[in-house]
Image 1 (cartoon, rainbow, N blue to C red):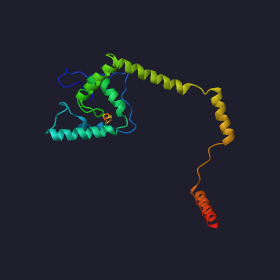
Image 2: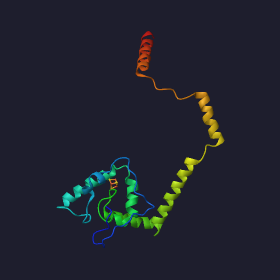
Image 3: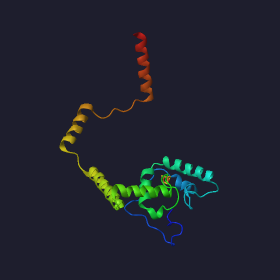
Image 4: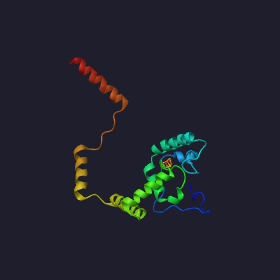
Length: 175
Ligand code: SF4
């Protein structure tokens, strides 16, 4: 879906570099089955309305279980020129237009810049948290915990579990 919309001059729209497409830990359905999401003539293409509705429902279901649906939706909203057609993040083009209007209501006409700033601040906070060393008291608590409790015990082997169970049963019989 890298092409600008139908009827546009032939050019390839570029994604907003501030919003990289989210990484998915597994292949997404739109990668493995792109035709399911391709409503190139708008929301109501297809042989019959019922067939189109079925295909829409199937595409929406696929998106609803996608691990990156939330970030995919954000990407689709900010990259308007790249998402003029098709189902993206379970939304049709007209639903995305409605959502963009809501974003203007909530965050103002510069809502994309506002989102980019929020994302940047979040990334900086996460980076700072990764690089901030433990405070003296946090380090003391961790040391104390190791001294008192020792290292985490290893899980029991199946043979040890069997032996423990046999002892327990014998103890119960004797009681
Ligand atoms: S949520 Fe986005 S990435 Fe996932 S299947 Fe739908 S369109 Fe593809």
